[in-house]
Image (spheres, rainbow, N blue to C red):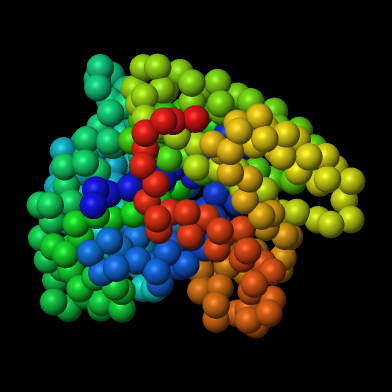
Length: 287
């Protein structure tokens, strides 16, 4: 089975992209076989994902994409979430350097496609509380790309590298405007860089049952999903919950802070996405 790469993208900031990566990694790592672990990739120069997982002192993926070391040398164990390829401020300068190359936007795709069979073993002193015992066992990882806000170099690189696109959309006024801009960019990326890029689906986030604008956003997303004739999934909305700010402060596992009944309500959307990704749908017939 080939690796599967999913980009979590929305040009708007604060919609829950990093939270989505953390939650999906936790759920997917529990479902995936040992030869197909989860690998989170932090493509945001702000590196919030990296900070939450305590890897700010580790070299970022930017060094690898500029030819300094292999991906296997940059992997950091992320406990029950699998693996992390850290980000950092050096992604800013790396974007400037790579943008000068005609194939700069393809560098991430090339690195992810070529590196997994060549990975070496972790240092024996590194803790291994994860599914695979060493990167050498990684044959078909499920890669989650945590993208920065906007439609800049790293977001475009992620779209060029991804098999699928997952779009978290905050249930707030004007939310659909960023979705329209993103889909225009997706069409451009398909025509020039990645014709097989598909939209896995849309995930409404920060839903509030009593907010009228939330109903309007959900109705708009439902219309869009229906217009795709089933090709684009609309996942169950993620409710606004105090557990998510806590998650983005201490990085703890959701299952450690949620009662079983509450977890089923809060994580319904993420569970639905995890079920789709574990099935590894074919990247053909993009929509």
